[in-house]
Amino acid sequence: RPQCVRTVSNFAPREMAALEERLIASVGLLVQDPVLQKDLRTLGWIQKRIMFSNNSLRIELRLPTLLHPALAELKRKIEIVAQEELSRMSTEKGWESHPLVDVHITATQPHPVVAREIEEHTELISRLGPGLAHVGHFVAVYSCKGGVGKSTVAANLAYQLAQMSPGRVGLLDVDIYGPSLPVLIHPKDPEVRKSPKGQGMIYPIEHEGVKLLSLGYVSPNSGVPGSGPNGGAAVMRGPMAGRVVSQLLKGTDWGDLDVMVLDLPPGTGDVQLEICQNLQLSGAVAVTTPSKMAATDAQKGIEMFTSLGVQTLAAVENMAYFDCEGGGRHYPFGRGIQDLSKLENDHLDFKSSNVFQLPISVRTNEANDSGAPICLTRPDDAKEELLVFEQLANAVSKELLLIQNGVSSEHIGGLGSPHTVTFPGESEEFDVATIHMSVDSEKEAFIVRLFSEKGATQVTVLGEDLRFRHPKTGEKMAQQSNKQDPKTSEGVSLAESMVDHHKHDSQPTQPSALFPVKVDKKGRYGYSIEWADGATIIYSLLSLAKAAGGEVKA
Image (cartoon, rainbow, N blue to C red; front, top):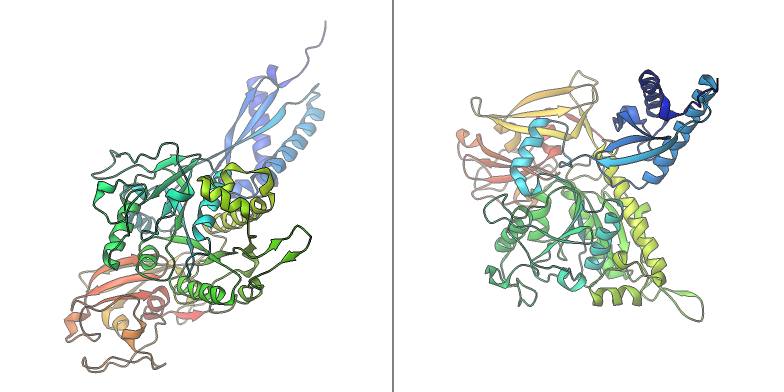
């Protein structure tokens, strides 16, 4: 009687279950993610069911994001480990052949990357609104000088990231004074449509895997200065500019996005503060040119974002060089990259290893003029430029993946390095970046929570313990007459150190004024506190940790 050939197609259910359990255990334990250096079981990415079809099987992975610079490498590792395990099983069981392995990767619905506490996550979703509820990361692209190619970098970065995560990348033109997106990108369907998600909400424009929006796409009948493709000058003061930015952000139904790229206007003004204080920015990308003046301005931008608790993940030096037909590479504006590489120090939160140089490029300029970024059209004669944008996107996606999985240390406002605190008589270290603060109305005080690798602690902070501290450094300040501006031990004026402004005198006039009325989270920097006397002050996370009695360990 002929023996039946043993293949996956005629396995008994019990054999199927045993194969499935063994493969999942083997792959889950032996395969480490190349970026996070953790096994798949620890990460919780591998699904417990394997799909069988004819003489093949499919291993399912569910990641929190598709923005992973080494997905191809991860898939190869899984295939190798699975094939090796199947070969061993074939020898043990006497199979004639073993199934082929297919790895299928999908992503879960994204949520804003915030601290570990559910309460803070709920507060953030409430503050962002329904349109931003499923945006994983916000990344700002900025420059402190106009004309350096910031918008070109932002657009091409978005389309390069979309190569990893099609349909889950957004690009918002926040430069409301001079929107560039309608010039750089010509969507097939530029109409902005209403969304049923809320009153006055709209959908972004979807074009080739990226969701877009700009004031230049908005109808000129909106009443906003500068709106529409042929809109005139956007003449508006800072507060109105902030409201327009807020409307573009929160009044749009963005759907599921792994990342939203924000093309900021040049400088360090109201719009930048609005973004940093009202969004949980995961990081930023600086754009500059090699000239000494532009590099100096880039340093100012890095300093500003560092002071607001936002790390500059990468820097792009645009128009850095050109290669002439006769041979040789020329640097007409100098080698500014050497200046940028010196910016990594104790005061600036910047990785000098993530600095990228783009050439002076006719191809990039032609792509801009045609309304189709080179990372979308991918011309054969733009390999050099495409390689740089690929390296930039890989660096940014790697940093975001580390942040999302808690491997990369958070950085707090006012300082460029991660900090922990300990409390008197205890050795356990608590991460300052995890601080969550609320108001205890009965005690007229603050509740400050900090987290460590082992657990959490909660401290009650009285108003006077915080009000008379430097809002950035947390140093105690002398309680002087309300007619004087209190000084820190460094001789810095309290008014000079404010990120925000006071509505009244810096000093409270009576004890009841030390009661906190309202508390708002301000991005990754800290919290804005409205006091009973009407004063509004933004305190860094560092100052809150010190007010809670923490002793800082750098």
